[in-house]
Image (tube, rainbow, N blue to C red; front, side, top):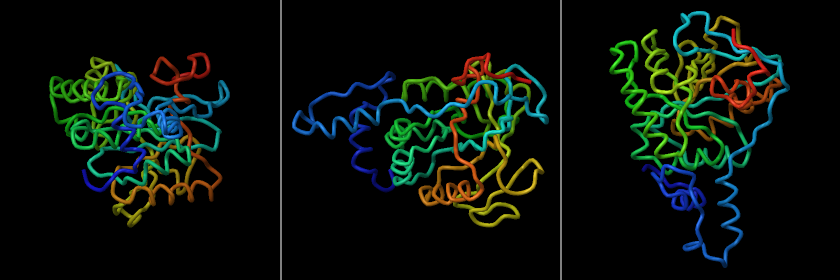
Length: 285
């Protein structure tokens, strides 16, 4: 690993038992009964975050207009009047240890689309992210353009990534994000075959730690022709890169300035699509 994780994150990773494939169990041992405060903090880190949920029937989920309907629904945003956006972070080949602490302490709902090949080298880091409240979803094994592969190759990329993430973090992914957004109807079928319920693309991108076309370094761009700035229900694409902690603080400043807040996208999706909301609370169009 590059860099050092915060002490609590490292202790957490040891406590959970990497690769256990089940909800980890806290034990006495190293922490001992003489440090109950540390054990209490670790227990809190292991608990699932409960993010605020929207009112029923205040949003809808719509098939991406540019993607033909297939075996698995595909979305780019959520239709809502709530002034919220959804922060999603891809890949995992680089990381910023301070980012875990910011997400945990400021209680920022994010979603990770993890390229599973990086679990081998950075498994502890993503355990810490998972226990800070980020769901670990599927971004393939090796980050290929899915639409260049036959269906057998697409199945292998998706199914193998789901198996690795389930074994490592105790939960099988239900969302898939194709690398580069490159997909076809074979991708939808392969995703269904691997137990995926929803393909989640994006409609805005924060080029954190890099230069975006026409927006410069750390630039923000919309991909839907809807002008500049945020709109309710945007799905924002970011990446695990060096300096992510400060980049997230920049994003939070932009959101606050425009009267928005980050929200947990899983709470705006019905259970039939892999989310937390009752199916009666929303519709898919």
